Length: 640
Image (cartoon, rainbow, N blue to C red; front, side, top):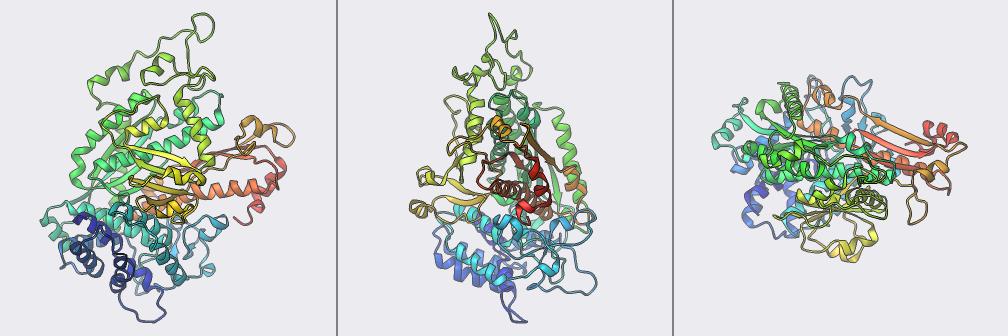
């Protein structure tokens, strides 16, 4: 374990004492750093993690116990400054008012955007989709009961089950456990308005710490003295995936149900894979440095030393995208510098930086692929295909779904299947849509290779070019799909009990990091093995055979991130908004649709989530008019 990992772990747990401190019923209790040291002694060091030697243990102890004292060791100074920069987003309580850390709940992020009519709060409960998400929805203050003792006991019980095979496995799993239990815990209440979660504060403190680690000692000293606010601290790296709508919807009706879902899921997996590709090349950044990733957009906090790597990473991404998507889709990367001043909400400079990054991304989208090498010239400007009729004598051979010509398809090792006339890539999207409906877990595995992937082209082939693979797995197949001694993450889908073993062999597997993900996966089944297609949905309608289609999206989400927080924009608030939007679109919507299908009293399922994530959704179902008033009134979802 190097100093870098010690800094990550120390910064991630630097305020864990606040969580434990709030379970004490006494009026006066020890300061939270002492509770943090007690936590390390009783819950971490007793597990004797082999990746931590004595020196790193002392470094971590010093960060947790002395992060309010900038006279400590270098890593403690860095964590202390990062803590202060992160805390610079807090808004002080008016006048001499004081909060109550044990009783004051977390203010919903949606109560801080625009001009809300009234403030709502989150209860102190673990993050979960149970009970139709009712338990995690914001409520009025008088409806909130804070039970930190139960929350803490559940947390430390699961902490004891975290895998500790190595530092990476432990840190990734710990981040998801902290998200599950501290998403609802205010990071500060005594002198600050409690609208920032402890999870987001811990996460951003780690991200800023890693950026400070690469700075000169002179800058660290200035920041420690409260000076040098105009000096650069970090890079805000933005990514924007374009061509999404055309990719999803420009297909024929052949296999459209599973094809649409598969294409939508592929785009999210593609965005995830590119994010991890970028972060690996930006000094192997951990997941704490990913601030937002949804809807084809992502934002990463990176060290200043990474600036000269961005253009080369852009070129590599563009060449891969061009090779497989022929310019129909592209991804642009840009970055701006953030100064120490930008982390202080009183300075109100972050919105301007956010707008500047959006402008740079917009300009780069207008000149996509400008950075590629001359060898890729024909891939951009063609010519493409041979043209001509698709029927009759001498016809062109095209894929029945994407309509791409056989000659272009064969350039990237795709084949057109004789049985259904679909190319291997389009068929793989259908298989992906099928596997999501059956899956309980998602396995993410690093697949870094100097050689291009072999075999026919599928969605998995493309993602392996970015050094990663994904596999959706039912629980009964999990044991056979999780080999030991492989760098991977096993995500439980739509269930935050991600440390619960489903097989004895999995319980013994301590080499895989564990986590959870929400995903819209409600699927109509014609039988136990066959997913109903759109024709079956229309046949199951009431009266006339029709589909019901729901499409929703949030207007001007980019403007919301730039201006929606008014006088208090911050990195943590952006991170928290991302988390709560994902919980709604990827978790809550799935629960609504699941509950709706269950309401059919033993009839066939009627809803199919094609896509739900980021800031929009697309759902298809049977047209059952008599149930519409029940859905609108919420009676079918029992108060959701």
